[in-house]
Image (cartoon, rainbow, N blue to C red; front, side, top):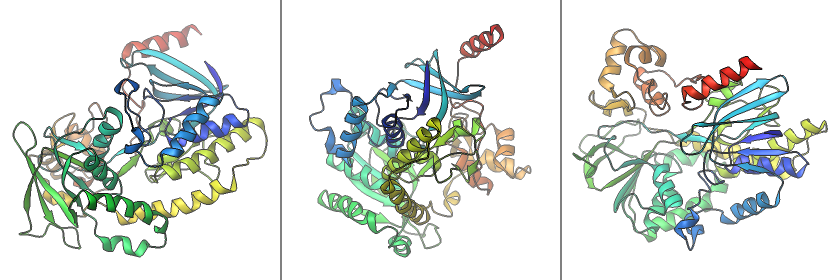
Length: 454
């Protein structure tokens, strides 16, 4: 299969980029692992579920309708259920390797002159005693169950962690009939106050969620954290405690909240596997881009959460700019993104930076992680084993990994990397993985054989 531009990721950034490039006459192929376009933000329930009012679980539904209808009317070729595991530079441009279908065994190749990465982000969850119990889910996971399957994860829930995602998750659960026992936010209002000007545009949205929580009588516990989840075979409750201004648990403030669901999250991290595989430079943990959303690898653009966590509105602006830029370079003309997109990007990046500065996990979260707490779920490595590795001289993630196998499992460190770094006392570092997802050996063998024959 051939195209001029292949866009990887059909969330807000990928949709905006595809439409912008196609509108300028570019042959675009849009690839995504999900069965439907929209990404996590615009995740849709299956048609067979017969959702009467899917818009009730969504924010900015009209924007989604414009994107959906625009895509249907465009020349963009959409390939859903295509799981991209590698992008390779070739003499004529790029080859995108994907695995087709739920079994992920049938290989597919897409050849293009340019690539636009809109791979999004994934949730950041820090460990605590009991976090592996059935009934403990990520905040985004709870939201995905509601949006995609119209299923509530439980009857009585606690939403906890830090970050703006907790507000829509708690409001969505409450609207679906779940009794939300509390929204437990480790950041206090004082952390937001210094960023008032940058966050002014977010106030109406935040006020709307606050009103919904008030209407459903959801208690909000600011400057609190979950210190332990309880249960034998599944979750039966959590212990929460207040934090002091330094981020330490205040003794004597612990209390238990009965619940059968805990939706927990500590923000998002950018998906950079494909970008790193192509050799793209990073800015911290995100893909580095210029004013046109170009990476430092010629022919590769990036937009959305992979270039820094900033939300759907920022992803739409970046996607539009990237699509316009890619189209211009493929046609040999000057880039022409709408001035409104450029202005919106500047404003929204300021808001994103303010939110990132305001919302942070408690500085001393590791003090609540007991030695028997599992840190790496794939390899069942405990915090005590990680600490033993530190006693043996390990001072970074890689050495801990070599001594303990933390990060060597199925997820390749995506779930535990930040936790291991925190326990090791070092900042998280990018992980250069050869493939973005597990690949059957048979697929690799067939590809190697084809290369030899050619």
